[in-house]
Length: 330
Ligand code: NAD
Image 1 (cartoon, rainbow, N blue to C red):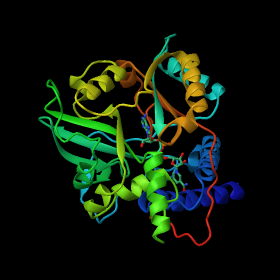
Image 2: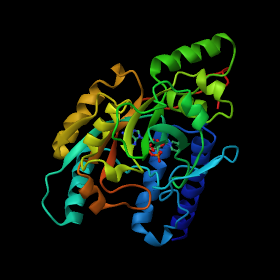
Image 3: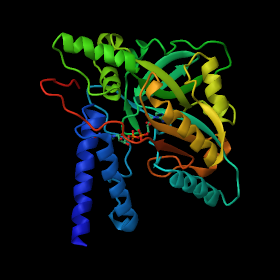
Image 4: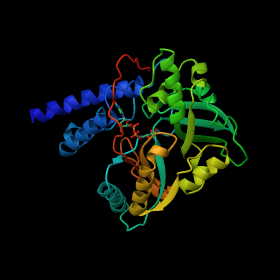
């Protein structure tokens, strides 16, 4: 038992430190695949020994503490993470778990979306005007980044059309398209400046700047993937909500599709994985969400993630490489 305790402590310490470097400092020190491996080991250990699981465990926490240099925004509805599946079997088990929980033999319709590798943001529109933008932070409290977000041309400052809720919170991912990332790094290299380690890190580092002129100079983009506050006033289909956001001027990935059951999800996954290299932005998997909002509400949440959604992760594309004589930017 002392071996188990000490391995548990070690995993918690490692994951807490790697999480701090990644979420708070935008400066990952290990490859995502390594972080994921350790996290799965921790989750498996805690499943076998539930007494080890505490509210401070990295397995139940979302993201990292907001940086104190920013004002803080308390999320009215928490911004959670996503559980993962890595195989067809795990995908089917995800679907079966939901049926077991709902105690009925349902055929689920899923909204299938690319899992963009950027930074989650919350955008608050009041009477159709963008009034506040925040990072996810630790899920409860995020960083106020309104001025920075206003510089991202893909994000409307004023909604189009009419009929939106008086207070509408749009959630989505700010990301850096591959072409912009490569051009920016090439320019930085030529000028002997620091380069970014990957587009995710570049997007996060560009958005969490104290000087919004720096953010404005970075090639950032945005896709919406959900609604927080104001969702109750929209329809009962997640996909229809996204389509509505799109009609109000918010960018929506053209890849987002409705699919039937785990088999439909698997086909969506295989198609996107085959086209991964051609997509103009980096993705680290796809996300499946039960489309019916009433079922989502019935299924609810566990500590850090909804029960009605999961990410289907792609195999790691690259292990982290450190280039000699190149200083990375954070
Ligand atoms: P996650 O990235 O696995 O999933 C949640 C996030 O997915 C959301 O916050 C959102 O930003 C994003 N997302 C993208 N497309 C989405 C969509 N269509 N719908 C909903 N969300 C979407 O969760 P996480 O807890 O933020 O991060 C965990 C991952 O981060 C790990 O799997 C690991 O790979 C990486 N990580 C790496 C290190 C490291 O040191 N390398 C450290 C911590 C975390």
